[in-house]
Length: 436
Image: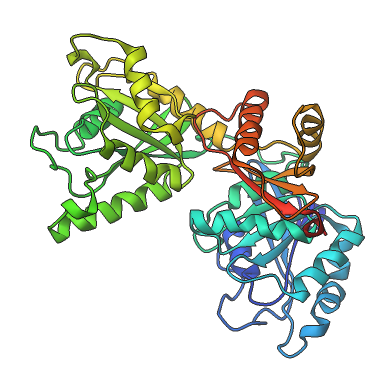
């Protein structure tokens, strides 16, 4: 291993109590910094050697500032970290995603931009999908590379490290190839549509209890499997009934837990029963996945048991009942006979990669110039601050939001140009003044 002083340096900065030390520990993989709720606990700089995908680097957690010096925080942070920042290859600027931006955040962002160093904005404490959607508000700091993370739960940290280490040399040989990443897949649907049978077909063993009695699976059953260099974790959630139909506490809890597993998943397999057709309860369950911004594959199960196999008619029924899920591919399978099951792995990975896709700001704005649409309000600038789901922020010349029809047109054009199959796309608008 090269000596620490020869390694490229990445510096973590931010005002007190935003989670710099927690993020430092998450990246280093050991408890080097003292983590606590009191602002300003870290007084001195903490150094550590970290590795990400074969790239070694030195990580520095800059010191905190004594309480009461709020008006001097930005300049004091830079004063304390001046030497390490001058030699850093990248700066990670940490802000608190649970609170509103402060004057200290804005001042520090301005000072960092003036340094001419690459800066990544880590919006910390973003541990739910709803908070991730709010993270784009921090784009007003003027830093293009924004990453929602939860240092405590290690969410989004890999994406942040992929970015800040992209230009670093690989100096650790990869002796044993490991799966690139772990894709979490939730299998959801009404009771007795074949979710447990599908899980068993996917993993090749009886991990879930399969029974013709509706509602056999009360608890979520999960199993990890590696396939062609990718690790998958499948979760067979309990069959979801409408809340008004769930009288027993255990079943009510199973609904809550199933929705939680949807929230924590990367890809959702929505299982329908081909013999029963599409009903409103299927749309209700699909809505849970859509609301959480998950990538979705619609799996029409028991297709072998359908006498009149008309895929086009069935898909039309799906589209009519779930208009909001127009981006989700409809796949016809039979978990019992394994028809179409093996192909699900590739479709899950494609959906995950699609939901994780990121388009550069320059390419997005070149794409914007090619659009032939009435610009009212006029779109001045577009950027993509986050992924899963892909989220785009439009800066316009007025405060009124885009009309629904124009937003839909823009989403369709983004899909046509950049893909993003199987995942919802989120569009946010900001008036021009917010750009600064």
